[in-house]
Length: 193
Image (cartoon, rainbow, N blue to C red; front, side, top):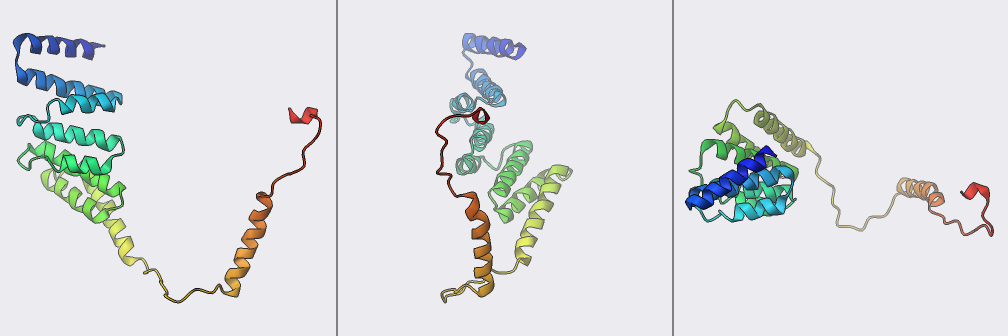
């Protein structure tokens, strides 16, 4: 409730003074508040109000990408995050690299995630979370490198006797589960209830 009063006061001050920077800052704060509440459509609306401003552009694109990421729109999040200028503040670039790494890891793009976490560590070498995630990416990359290659044969496959026996066994086990019960009782009994 206290946050709402502060936001309302800032909004009133911004409208009375006509200061566009204050109004833009208020829109960003309001977007952050709505994002924290889980109201992603309203948060994105607030951020989109200030996307064309050069002063807040990197932060707005970062926040808007976070909204898209929270909505499960990974490609949109990456596209917006790629619009963040490389001359942005170091803290923002760290957060951006970390979030991109996390999203890429979730998508199974471990090499790309590794490079993002590596960028994050170059910006903030003391980050334990970035180090941990970098190691996870490295483990995934190494496990895929050591995995045996799948055997692909151009000839049609004929099931071996052992394979047929296994399939027959599974069919017998599963077949009993999926049979329908066609018999129905004509009158309800006490056990039906």
